[in-house]
Length: 173
Image (cartoon, rainbow, N blue to C red):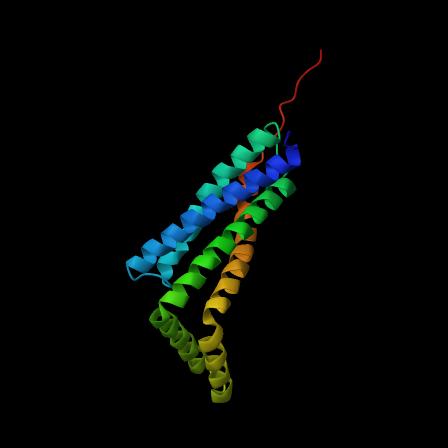
C-alpha cells in the first residue's frame, strides 16, 4: 500500500508535533519537580520551540519541498505543528493539576489576588473563584492550547523567515 505525499506530510507533522509536545511536557515536568512551574523559567520554552521548529522546518523543506519553502507554507507547517504540540502540553497541565490540587489552588489564589489588586469588584472575584475551583484544569488546558497558538504564530513567522531558501538559478546557455 503506497502512502500518498500528503499523507506522508501529515504523518511527518504529527510526528514532529508529538516530539515537540513531549519535549515541552518533559521540560515542564522538570520545572514542576524543581518547584519552578508557573514562573519566569517557563519562558525557556520559547528557546526550545525556536530551536526545534527551525530544525524541523529545515527537515520538512528538504524532505518534501526540494529545498525551497515559501514563507506561507513554512508558517502553516509550524502553526499546525505548534497547535498539535500545545494539545500535548495542555494535557500535561490538565493531568498535573488534577493530581496536584494544592498547586492548582495556589495558582488560583495567586490569580485572584492579582485581580483584587487591579480593582476588580469583590462579587466578580468570588464568581471567578467558584468557576476556577470547579474547572481550573480545563481552563489551563484550553489556555495552553490558545497560548501555543498565539505564541506559535510569532515563532512560526520568525522561523519561516530564516528557513526559506531561494531556488538556485540555472543558466540554460
